[in-house]
Length: 226
Ligand SMILES: Cc1cc2nc3c(=O)[nH]c(=O)nc-3n(C[C@H](O)[C@H](O)[C@H](O)COP(=O)(O)O)c2cc1C
Image (tube, rainbow, N blue to C red):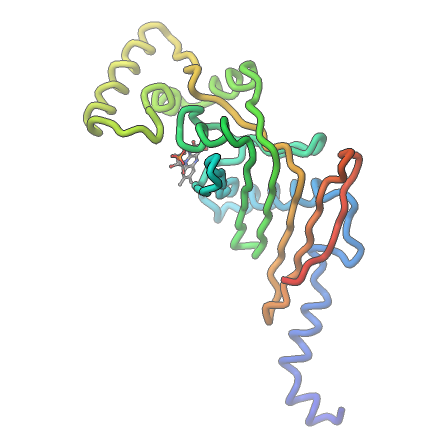
């Protein structure tokens, strides 16, 4: 290509060079996606522009296969066995769906880093000790809220909900504690697949999917078309 051709095609050449230079997911994909997922999560935590860096859309399905989705906060990512933990009401819609169909999918979108991470897996409850420990770390008002809120149920009125919260708050303040209600606790998604997606110009995004091998001893990894 001569000099004027190079000048004309400079923006395209620059974009292509940028595409090659970015190595969010290296050409030789890592055998285990969990360190990368954890690193992306921690980088999002460090990016103060997020209100909720740990917000993820959580999809569950009723036994008849009909899906539902909502945002929850991921409280931890565990490497081995690979898992995500979130907390909710066991009697909520998601809780009822998970009790009859214990499978879930979740997705994070980190807009500032232009990354998406998807996970899928079987779901189990956290132990009561774990739920108690986490509950104790929550602010008083959140503990009151979890106790009085019949999440996903039809309620008489918002006024009634607030009156219950005030009554419980006063009683808890007198007793000096508010115990975790048995209807509230954690779930652990035991991850069997992870998909990491990183945006690139020209919609030539980078995307790879890891699936746990049948004996859970390792991962099968594949690069996917974006
Ligand atoms: C940013 C954000 C964070 C949320 N975090 C949680 C959470 O950690 N746990 C939870 O039960 N609901 C959380 N919610 C509320 C849920 O999106 C949802 O309204 C609620 O869990 C009831 O869902 P369900 O009826 O499908 O069970 C959050 C909502 C938003 C917007």
